[in-house]
Length: 351
Ligand code: KG4
Ligand code: ZN
Image (cartoon, rainbow, N blue to C red; front, side, top):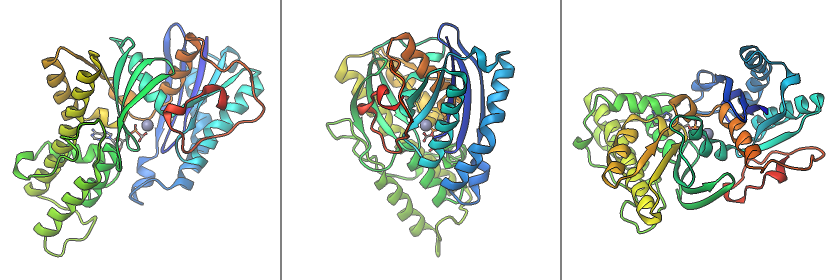
């Protein structure tokens, strides 16, 4: 069966075609990063309007690439939440309209389920059960993934997400938006051991995280080291690179330590990294070496599948269909869920 999937929860318009037996057929993505850069963050109304502009040309593009037409589609999937309400509504209404006009069923997908399952598109494919470290701009969670739709929350952030910690620190350093990759690039030129930053909750007995204190610590260092420093003022030189490296090291240390703790606690030997921060090279290197020490294997989706994309939404729907977990009865109308905890996932609710 062929699934046409849409992602529009934030600032990326993603469209993809996935076959339930053959996998990814085609995908297209437009990122709005440059548009939001001038504002230092995502402007929801601009995001919605841009999704409207992009979604149909991207759909035409994937159909062309896969040599398919709308008549070949069996299911339409879209991100139903969580995310920006207006942005979600664009993807949801386009998906539902296409499904209605083709007389095919539509399925709302939880954005984080897309991230959790996307590593299974890669080769080697992680078999269930596995631990997933979900690290995005909005979420930092450790989940035990027993199967499609069977997710157990082991720990999560109590305040800022790891990606948010990257983004906010980058903003303090005047690096621009989105900050994560920019901070990581600057960190490559720095020495993280030169500046001592806290590793919040590193030694707590549970698997929860907290990153807001780290941002405050960076702020304090900036105020102390740079006379008349103003937030967002570009900070340059070796000290800035060292501060970026120290921040990255502190975030990565906590993520690695908690992931290893989750593997030890559950006895599982497979760790899957999902979400945008999964693109971070230091995180990848550290996780691989620490997991090796305890005989565990780490799976990374290719970087282009780590950040938001349409393939993960179409693929999650395909996994649901293959597992017999697709919504069975069509519903009148549809809704989006800007706030939607993954553990309350119930696909029949959003179909
Ligand atoms: O999963 P994602 O694309 O969107 C959300 O659902 O949030 O994740 C975006 C986050 C942003 O915070 C971005 O700064 C971060 O992932 N990110 C990175 C890197 N690439 C993206 N953080 C650190 N290092 C990177 N290389
Ligand atoms: Zn995401």
